[in-house]
Length: 161
Image 1 (spheres, rainbow, N blue to C red):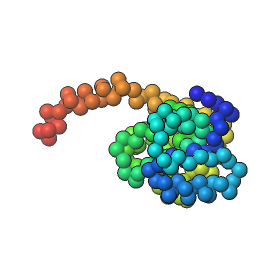
Image 2: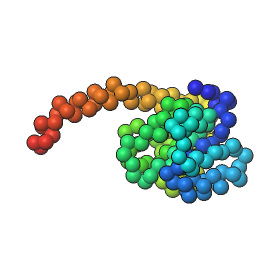
Image 3: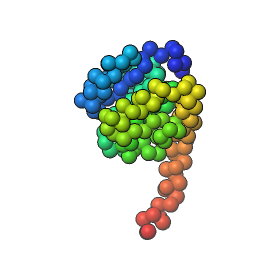
Image 4: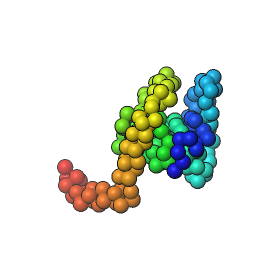
């Protein structure tokens, strides 16, 4: 993927699930000298992935509670630094300070995480992004199949518990 220097957008806000919050966040960011982009509309998967790959930092704004939250994992795979609040469905792959930043779902907390991301050294950012890629590699279709088959192997015990 593109290096940080090759990416055109400093901060992408993936806010199509929480448009008003995304707009408020962009309004706040506009007072600083960063290039920002707000995705507050549905787009094709191909376009979404392209925009992730062109952004240094991506803030994901999921619903407060979601099932398996794939977009933050896609962000990790694209090489953007992921900021994503807890939405339950990302707890199996988002680990605060290890492979992403995971603030509380509040404007102040997300603003603080943006500040933290912007103040990181390149080495700190690269370390988080390397751990993120390690996380992505664990979420292959083969690994998902093996986990599902393991549950099926235990189905009888689980139903009789």
